[in-house]
Length: 351
Image (cartoon, rainbow, N blue to C red; front, side, top):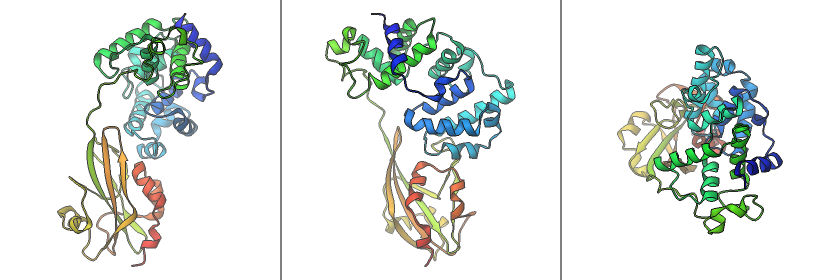
């Protein structure tokens, strides 16, 4: 069986109708690939349509304020992707005259572009035989060839890349790459793959040896870090609150949040009021209550955020105030956004 031809034949009949597959414009393809990292197609599609409409050219994205880009990205997560997207757009517009590099090696030099994204753009837009390897590709190759090398090791990364490169259709590298990724997404799924109607079934090692559920193999993940967040949600009688911009290189860089106190463990109200940070931030005549929506466990890839929202009713605000009606203009993490959807600040103004 010709592995490559079989996948391409399947793809041409089964592929989803997605807008970024209708263009060879490297700017639009790059944008879609950055958005689809760590993101399901169904979720990424709306963001792609929104961004491509607001910024039809790379120069348009380059001219935008970072705060605007982050606000539009809100809800998609992994915000470093948005910052890299904006940084690279400015670099291409200002340093490269608006022209994308047209080969894998040069694409790889762009900020936020790794092996997978460079291979995708090079093959989709410039017909370069550069094999893509993402989660779907790992799964298809591991199962079909019965490979037990862990995919999250340097040995596994190298082995699967070399194998994918040896299989790529030199005449239609872009279509082959799309085919194997789509096959992994729709046919050879992580859970409940459709093996019975699979065109590769007769020569699939995992199917023959009943290893479908066992492959691909991953080494154990890093230990998840626990962090304890306490957000101080100020409500004044004038309908204002306080937002602060996150700095540094940690999560949500450049985004806005309520004043935060991070503790080493979960802390009750009768203890938090004695913390030095709390005393510095909260006026003495304030009324402190616990929001009915106030406890959330927000799970990120390598850390879990155990979060409390403390409502602080006060006549005095220590810091730059923001009208509650204007909060929607700020880019906030989804953790904050979800809270705001449920919280009615007006019910806390009368005190």
